[in-house]
Image 1 (spheres, rainbow, N blue to C red):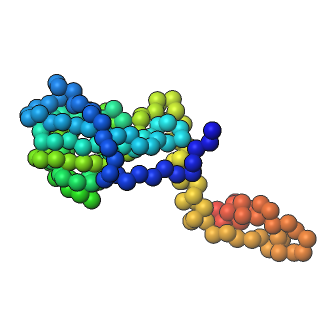
Image 2: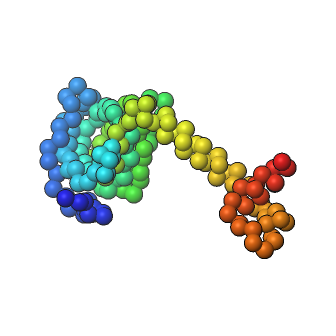
Length: 173
């Protein structure tokens, strides 16, 4: 069975299920959290969900990268070495994989979250290297003028590969 080309949801209207915060993470109050997963990526590394929580303060561990977008209410977040920040409706934040943050919910908060699982270094190192090389090639391509050598202007000379020859000529070789 094939997947549809896109998924959509009304984030304000999703019914949420109980998603208790680990008791040892709760610092103050009795926060009650709920969640609903509504979509995931084709490769299974990224999921989208809506989460809400009542008043309380707790620590939260981010096992993967998480981008949050506040829909309703507010939360005061802080992290090791990061200044305290109030997130209100319309605000977004990225919480990096492998970090802890303290969440203080004064009354109530509802967020949309995009969660991405961390991939093993065996996968990410070649991927990062390939992307960096691609960016370098693109920067070089943008800096080098495309010159067509005079011999290529003669009739009957195909222009295939002239971009590379022009780039080599521009470098002075």
